[in-house]
Image 1: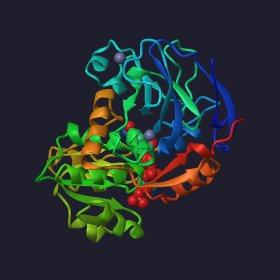
Image 2: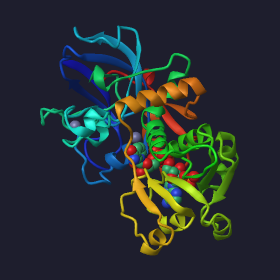
Image 3: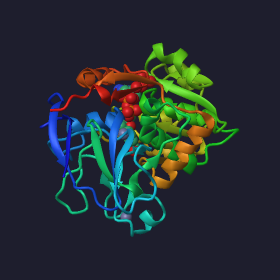
Length: 350
Ligand code: NAP
Ligand code: ZN
Ligand code: ZN
């Protein structure tokens, strides 16, 4: 077994505290990664607080992981000791179903194995995430980290990056389109960057007036205060695609009304309460309401390589792990610019 330590919650709605645990004995195809940075996703908060009703405790959150390979199994071919490696939201899947075969392991029919808050394929070994000193992962579920990017700013690409990149690719966001990104947080700021990089006319929807200047700096052509009815009215019926990254319940009907005929509103945010939809908003205009979950391994590597080529990284606030509980409180107030990343060198052995 591999001795590990990190930060965990032992039940819902309590602060994270130092925690000691063990990871599985590395197998032939496993790499052991010493984690240098881990991003802080709003999904960590939802799960730590059991807002989705599926939490298992103790829970070590964290699924935006980068670090250095410190050990490789005898059959590992992708890495050698000393290489940079990354891990995102999933660490295994059945590998045989049609979705796995298509490289869409996140939609595995047998259920993907989450980086934390999951059981391994043996059905009994819990998985623990990246708010920790190390992780043991099959090389098939690791990513290569581009050499030309700042590793701390790469970490959020493993979830916030791929979760916004994948739907924009799937729905074909491209030059000449008008694309909206709702919510300027961790996911939203990456959505703005990707939509801009794909050549679209980008409109950022925010509830935070103080984020306007940043939204423009990050790549938006226009910023709309979603609570201002007059500003919203000016965009009715004009969008090809809108990506909704909002973490809390909010009015989707107002967003659907902004789509053109045949436009799509894609949800990636997962609030703890289900939305109410007016059928009229879909039927009139043949509009679609859709959703998207992270991305598979091949597309995650594609996204990292795209970021390398275009020098796209997350805008981050680097924090010591001792500030994690305070960081959660700030995220809940939409106060993060625009992703917290934990500097894992601050983690002390338990
Ligand atoms: P985040 O950094 O906290 O950003 C969420 C943003 O939503 C906030 O910055 C805020 O933006 C906006 N917002 C918050 N409360 C709102 C409200 N009541 N009404 C309207 N807007 C509000 O969170 P994140 O890490 O980007 O995650 C966002 C959501 O995506 C979470 O639900 C998370 O679980 C989910 N997620 C899904 C996937 C997937 O695969 N589908 C992957 C990762 C995360 P403004 O200040 O600009 O309004
Ligand atoms: Zn995430
Ligand atoms: Zn599968």
